[in-house]
Length: 263
Ligand SMILES: Nc1ncnc2c1ncn2[C@@H]1O[C@H](COP(=O)(O)OP(=O)(O)O)[C@@H](O)[C@H]1O
Ligand SMILES: [Mg+2]
Figure 1: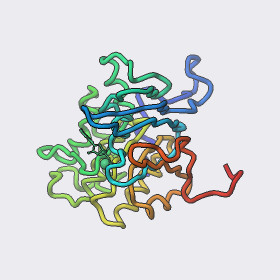
Figure 2: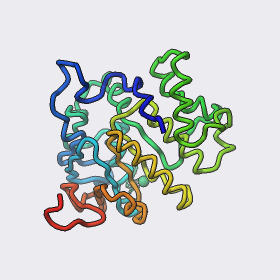
Figure 3: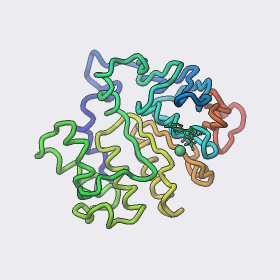
């Protein structure tokens, strides 16, 4: 599918890059670490309590739990749209809770986000929606066409570049949203119920895109309560939230379950 040709977009952030004496020799093992994280909105009781887990670089994770369990809240902490009320959050090995505000955009660019309701810019074409992160990052116009065209093809929308989002089906809009989320080659891709507004066939196709990205090394975190979808990714690990608490704090629950000792 040629997606790897977009590598120049990685902005030199690839872990363990060959030929650089300064690049770390070992792969970062934990790309995300939460320690006793709590989140309280206003004066309400805690929405998230004592949340501790760590995610391995290159892993594929599902976050499940009933509606209202706190999935979206946890993801917002992860993609730095929300600060915790207590606890420690480390991304890429750095404490992001005490991070100076001016360093936040640099971290946010390393995380791609896909929303259930797509959040495309309605007055921009599909092409311009996908190009947006590159333009915001200040990339030259001349360098934008190749990666955007490639992303359009990768998500199967090569002939829809000039369409407005409103003229696309839900599944097509979600593929535009995925293309926009990954065009900057983020190290982590976070998706909040990305299949909630598409049919089962399209959900499987979207998941195939996530798996392809994961094979290229992107850490994937998908919130969903779609259990058949989870069963599709044999190598994924599952985290479950129950009323704001992780029922498996080590993040070691697997779906489908594996025999003991199988890793
Ligand atoms: N911005 C907010 N302000 C106040 N309460 C919120 C806010 N966002 C979420 N909540 C509350 O936090 C709880 C968890 O919500 P959410 O994280 O959206 O769960 P989920 O994604 O699992 O459905 C719910 O009780 C919800 O009403
Ligand atoms: Mg939610």
